[in-house]
Image (cartoon, rainbow, N blue to C red; front, side, top):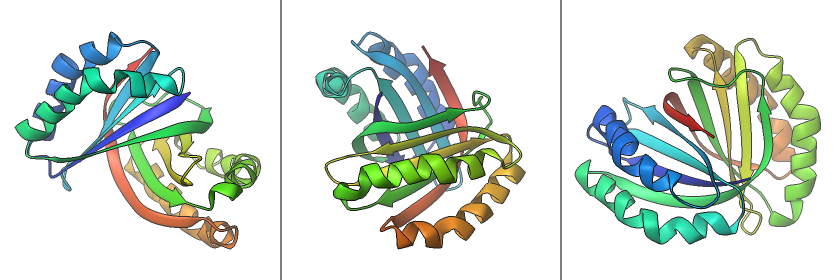
Length: 199
């Protein structure tokens, strides 16, 4: 599975942006070859809206870029937002209970030497995932990496804010081990899931 991640920052009206996604963006995405689903998450206080779309093959997100670019640009202009577009390979997916609208979401940016991606993913799946899943309130996890650059995102979904805060504290406690393996950590964003379309 492959993922395209759109991040809009400086969004003036999150609810209006989500309506635009549902009414304008979603029909275009659904009509594209290889489309497997879409979700949106928001940090309302920070004016951040993230859109994750899932695709069957690596070629699908690139093939759909021209069809979707006008819609993306219209959204960015309409809501006064700055947009970034990234593509990742999905490496680890765990679902105990499917996230729903209102679920809490923690999104952490990571990077590493591309030569260490496979080794670190194996460690993450074998050692870290069981620890995350053991935290009360866990719903789902997705680890996505660009194998060429070593840049990636880890997203975890939780029942509520309380579960998310417990997970965030546990993540900080594990961080030294990951740093020792050459993993670098970027920003962490705390959001709520505001829309889901699963195929």
